[in-house]
Image (cartoon, rainbow, N blue to C red; front, side, top):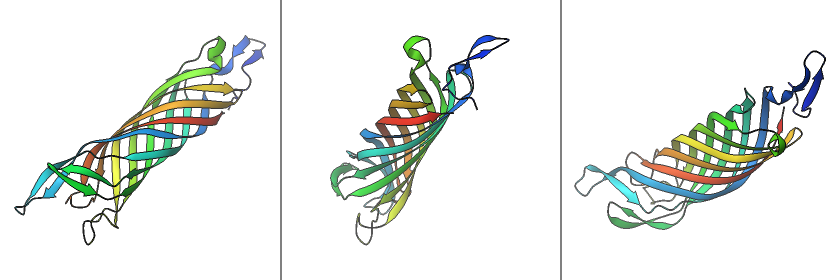
Length: 227
């Protein structure tokens, strides 16, 4: 592979050659703060007073997320365009709260979640002369799959205590950021937005689990290498 350390090289036949247009690979790690997480359109089949099942909406669900860690990679197939693959781990909590279930207010116990999100997509990184040789704004859009482990999902014998379930979400991720290059090392600052349609296999009194839309925003700081 051609290192990005050498920006210009001399070729006897071609003269000065800009090697930044060569194919390259970037691998980095990131960490950050999840400043906004929101659950909407929550619903699922629920037993009724008449012994059958009805689809009930759940309103007012709060979710608390604190931090995240990620690994990301990019393959630049042209100077400004790349394919990306990344993985991010984050933790969250459904706190003890009151929610509206089918028009009635009920208490909900605490539940912990551990999220694992895989994304694959493509992006654009701006480069040009001057400052833009080392400072490169970028944007990307990815398809994402998120898996999670959810705690305390029991209905019986004790509501909201014990038991675990799997959660699966599918959707997209938008990444906007800027990258500062120091030879083959880069630093990055990124805003990340996830939109995922999600299903929990088992969740308390819902007979077929719970469906909802999860919207999450992150700010991430990263460091990595270019090869």
